[in-house]
Length: 162
View 1 (tube, rainbow, N blue to C red):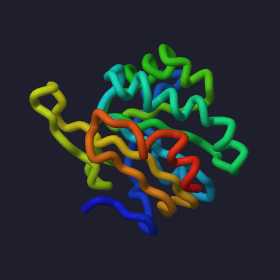
View 2: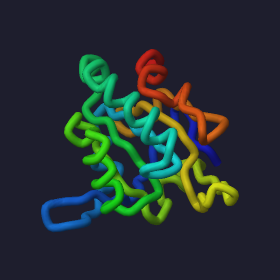
View 3: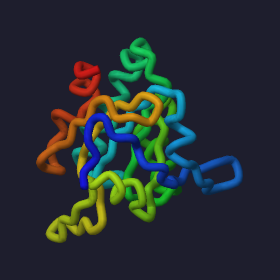
View 4: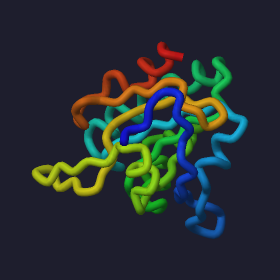
């Protein structure tokens, strides 16, 4: 079942790079009492993800801050090493975006965003989406029909919806 507006986000375990290496972080700890944006995408270093999706949130970071958003989180079915390197190479980490790996697809499966695209070599990946949540409750959800498109899930489109 795909998550919907009004639903509470599941307490999935995600991974990030900490000072000592990979560390777990629960989604509930990032969303409790906070306003967050979460955007999911098919994979680190892939075309549309790198050239359109991530840059759209880098461009709009200040505007989200002005609306009271506490954190913008990028989630992909990748390990935390790849996500940290990708955040650094795109400049998104320096821009203040958080990159978390959903290596076991725990969040992706729980919110109904899993998909496969064997011709592209993508197995067990995430659909492209963006959501805005307050205190863990989804207030806006915008998902793309095609993983190669970044229109309704981009930073500008989500910003206009909150």
